[in-house]
Length: 382
Image (cartoon, rainbow, N blue to C red; front, top):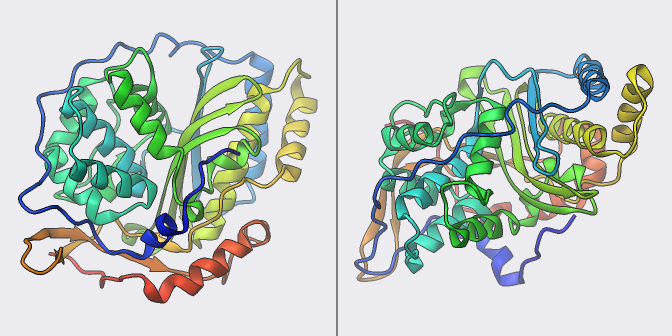
């Protein structure tokens, strides 16, 4: 997997609270977004035997898993679409930050971002910074602004959370694949510079947050964003999601895997990664067997596949809980913020799925050591 590395200085920014603004500078909304073309490949499907094999493999795997999960994949190389169990929407948690980024770039209408705007977008995607996400969410007009932007470009089954609760946005995997298409596709509404910028951010996420769909591309190209949340509406059970662009065995894939009601974050990571491996292996392998043989082969390969290349972050991305926080930006300088989001909640390896602990153990230890340096905000509502 090729996700660009970081300098030590950049990694240490993980423990830096909030976003700071230069004096007098703040992001400003731009003009309305342009309309993107419809998906020409919506009706294209993989060969029938591959669809059946993948359906069977996913059904068999999820039969033994807690919670529920769904998946969508668009193979840009062949034009094929595949969806699985995606009719009931899921909470997005921090995957909603990709939607916010798209709406923000649409509003810029090709104009260059200021240094402050670039900082907001960079920390929101690379470090899953909730304060920066909240700043950009306000910039695009909050719930109504995000809803208008997505509907204008044909993303019609995504509903932003009530009030300022962007982490409680509900969506389907296929809608999130469409968001990726609009964000990165040459035929979409963004200019080339904005598309390159979005891919650059998603290709350089913090190593501790590079788990997820990257598991399906250990030797390929990866650009991704993950979301993780102990959801109050599910009695604290975990929502764990991963979306991204992969280049695997000559196929350019857009993929979204959403899951909820996981007993621990680690269980959700294991489910998301296994589903991604099953889907990518089945849809990209050359030649092909049919029926039960293909299904069994997909399951076996996914079960013994190489490391995902990402490392599971041990904190809850509690992007749904607004509370009043002012982020100081230095003596004599203004305070930005207000209705921000709760910070990251560190968690350890207790209850982790064994395969996740085995693969991500070093990262778990590293994050645990740095937990004391991170800034935490109490979970509260305003």
